[in-house]
Length: 131
Image 1 (cartoon, rainbow, N blue to C red):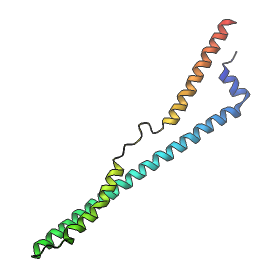
Image 2: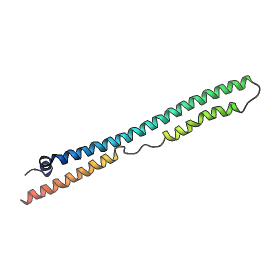
Image 3: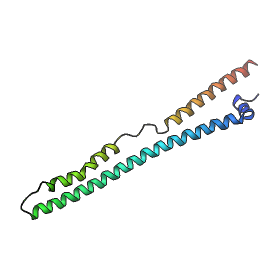
Image 4: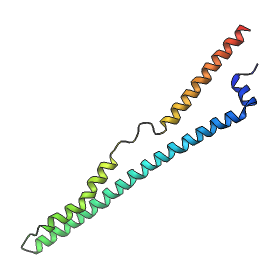
C-alpha cells in the first residue's frame, strides 16, 4: 500500500498544485514585504548620509564666514541645523529593527505541513502494523 501522500498526489494532483501555488504566493508576499523594508531602510540611510554631509559642509562655510566677518549672524548657526534635521528622521527610521524572522509565516506554514506529514506517516505505519 502506498503512503497516503503518494495516493493524494496520484489521485488529486490539483490539490498538490494548489498547495504549492499557495506556498509561491506566500513567498512572493513575504519577499515583497522584506524588500520594501530593505528599500525603506536604504533610503533612510541615504537621507541621513546626505543630510549629515550637507550640514557639515554648511557648518564649515558658516565657520569661514564667521571668521571673515566681525559680526556673527544667527543664520550662520540655524542653516546648518536645518540641514541636519532630516538626518535625525533618517537615523530614527534606519535604526528600527528588522523583523526577527523575515519569512516567518512561510516557515511556520512549512513546519505545520511537515507536522501533518509526520502525523500521517505515523498513522500510516500504525495501520500497516495492524494489518
